[in-house]
Length: 291
Length: 291
Image (cartoon, rainbow over all chains, first blue to last red):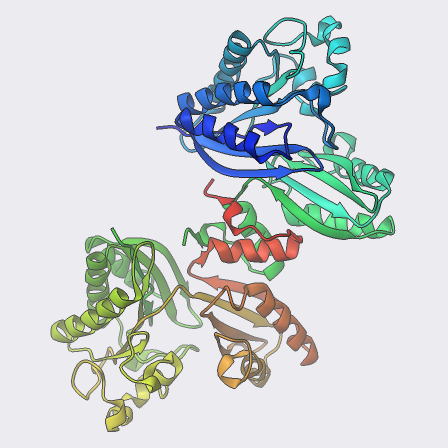
């Protein structure tokens, strides 16, 4: 049986009970919750959930219901951009799965969530119906607060649902994509412009590393963060990103404090980083056992 | 069902057909061969084989037969110390397995190999009957060529079999132990005394890193090697070893060329190295997926 993964990003990083309820709903739908992570400054949680096509689809719909019931975006303040209570919902093909089927699941989720909860959605990445919607950053521009203005533009009508956001739950970016590594790097500096400058130097759309998405965010008065999505960890391995950021940070007169993994990373990515730094040659991703 | 692993070290690193035959014998016994690696300079191959208790026991006995039939130690020259055609045979408890059962399997393998092939064995590590035999280095001292002299000493009678080595297959060190990482580091120098000095500074029995076994070997006129057994990768992570060796190599006026993994390493060890060098904090070995 083919396995799929969903990685719902929920706009709640402080109230553990809401995330517990979301996990409970996903498990009730027959899916397996592999990982959870919550960040109070981002005010955001990321779940990693796997199962059959029908189990992850049911889990996705159930999660949208829990998020709409318990999260009110009108009162939500965090450093990470968001358009919805359930903000982002990617479908990822794993063993035996196909991108085509992941796209169908994304579209079906959009339909069912609209029918049941009246929350509209945009389709992004492989599930996008137009090139402008491929990039998640484009879909999320203007955030929750800008949704009404956005929907007024015919070019930004939602892919599912009416041209009005759900009053408290906003809208959802639903996508289909390959495995991605979400990786944050903190810099010992309070100057957001430095994080933004480094993010700009890093990201693909501004001429940086291929397949990399990067945002600069402020965590504290003395701490900024690069929030990274590594969309092809084989083309752009983590060690190349980290070493480049270490160099750019030095050039900007600051330094890397720590890195942080959000969700899971494939064992091949860990093996590649371990091999690079330990000097193992040839690198041997197949040499990692489960034990 | 409990899973066990055997990691047979065979004194043949040049003739692939012999290793193919060994693998065929192990698979014929119902075990699964996870990995193979051969080194012509060591003249040695290491297999990683998993299965039920009875499957790995049957595979171990079958392997001893193939090794005895195809490998003649009287003509064997390699840089790695050895006492037998099948030189070392550790049993490792994996999921659901126990060290107690691994010890029983090691003892049973010694009995059956003696009965069937007339090859005597020493028991080492957790399977040892006396403290002097715990360390593999002690059991292997004097190598194949010194076995006759060794057996003449009542303190070194074999644990199974008569006090005479098999004429061509020698003897076998059969053990039970936890998972171990076999890791080699090459130095850009032909001076074996440097490798030996660094190995001495590294290894536990000479006051170095806890749980580390280290040998200095010469690979070429311009290349020496540290051959390492990391017997507790949680206590002594790979990055600590590699960074220490890089420093010691510099102090001896040389440098590390490359490292090499023999067999498998647990995903937790790869995650620990990746986390250390990428600056991920807290380290997250549970964050590595199978995909």
